[in-house]
Image 1 (cartoon, helix red, strand yellow):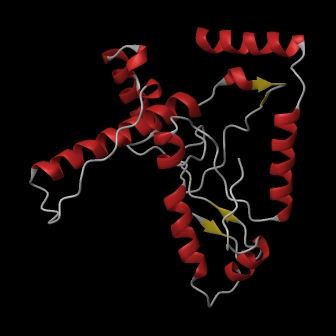
Image 2 (cartoon, rainbow, N blue to C red):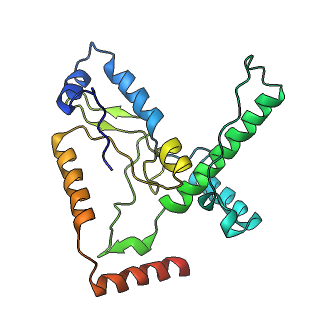
Length: 213
């Protein structure tokens, strides 16, 4: 899916603004992008989330996990933000549950192993490059988003993970080449023919191998 914001700058306009050292545009853009998607878990490192997810799976049936349940709306907001009333406590509980469910879905759908390899290379391009902070290249305008988990997609917590219960790779397209490549990929994907028999068996083998691990 490609989203184009009405009234937004073109990729070239964004690049020109990013390359202007006197413009505060880059800081505002980075802050906006980091609020939209991220490449980390919400409640800790991968090992910490692994332990949390394992505990959740042990404590509930498969159909009770967040993947099979609809998201719950957040409670009301305390007008005073006192942090002590029932409304504030309910909101804090919801926020903690929200983070657990997001990490559960991301952990279950975002991490891949050796089963995705073909000819020694991962077909899903894992592991991904990591960056401790978001970096804006002042020579080209290229942006490398902050990411600390090499085996996790860049995800949109609220829209994709929490509401739709899925982990989809979210990225920013800042060049005409990238936009054309994504459009070509989507067009090819939705118009492709049925898979060949050998591809079906390869998929079955991959699923079997994954479950066996």
